[in-house]
Image (tube, rainbow, N blue to C red; front, side, top):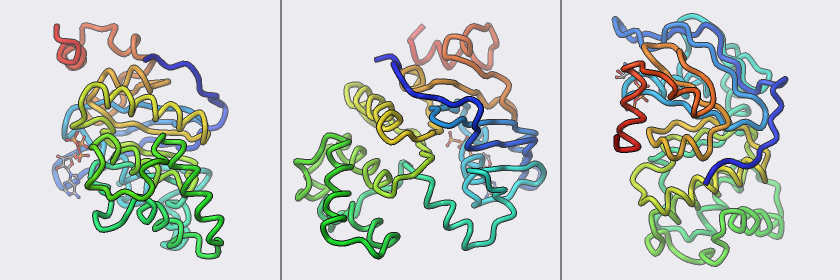
Length: 257
Ligand SMILES: Nc1ncnc2c1ncn2[C@@H]1O[C@H](COP(=O)(O)OP(=O)(O)OP(=O)(O)O)[C@@H](O)[C@H]1O
């Protein structure tokens, strides 16, 4: 399934990374990264294991500080925020990570209520029910509301995890390897869901993936982290229109050449 929509405002970056470097001792992971995520955009980040994709996400969410450079998220300079302001900012960011597992002892409804009750304390019971049902409907799983996570498939759990993130109405979504470990049909469903989320919730998203079918189906734009910088940027076809030996193997492996 190829992308059809999205309403991207290329004049409004929601994340701006400028000249960011980050080292750990002698390991120079990021070496002057520049990156923008525009309002309404799905930006795919590609890169080999260990190139610093997770470090970049941690810098954006204020879990790490850059050695040099600046990071602006939703108009705020991340490294200048105190803890309280950082917590407020993080509420506007939805994290869909591989290890963001559901609570096994809670029903789907309880899993979804949990972040709402914790972060929006003054909601009425009726409002909570409405929000839970709305996001479950958005991910096509309203019928699972009273089920336990153990009764769901891996793909369904993934969708519920995304619903749990959406329930706080984030402006930005960060998806880390959204299709890892899923069968091809479920991957197609998750890719479709990422695009539906973009349309319905008007989110701006960064999607980290090694799955080029995912990159192609969800990415409005793709950037590739090579040796600490984003050296390649463009549409899916532009990114892979090269003989660069650091880039071609991604394509050849995914499409079995
Ligand atoms: N807190 C830290 N202290 C020391 N080294 C770190 C720290 N965080 C990350 N690194 C190192 O930085 C490099 C980049 O790590 P990162 O997790 O960002 O890679 P990645 O691109 O996300 O890889 P993968 O695709 O495998 O998830 C790795 O060599 C890692 O060991």
